[in-house]
Image 1: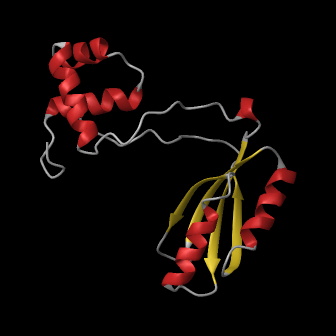
Image 2 (image 1 turned 120 degrees about the horizontal axis):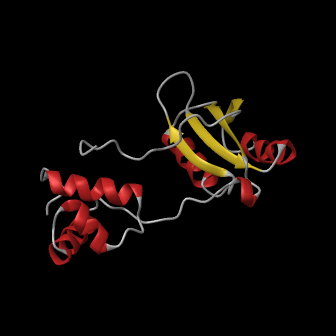
Length: 158
């Protein structure tokens, strides 16, 4: 399967089912896809090899692991050159509380999603972030309620 090939309905069904439950057995997946287990497993392997399936992982409960609070931080850099972007990127990925980091277009340069225990932990990680290369300004938005989390890629099979 070439990355540029169009996926068929069964491929999309398999991807959607695995996106919802990555631990689903091949037998159960094959039933959902209306395939026998062997061809189903072959399709999954092809989807993995082609890069459609990047990894499998468990979704953990952050509250039980002392990372129950989250915030989004807008980061503005004082200059936007390739070397500054690279320096920022190299250092921000080392901060364990940064769950996500996105370079964005618009009124600021990066949007970070943080996970932390409490406001004291937030203040500590903010102190690290403001010292990153070329950071000139930050704006924080503390999450009060998670209305809808990442539901994965919206596939047409639903």
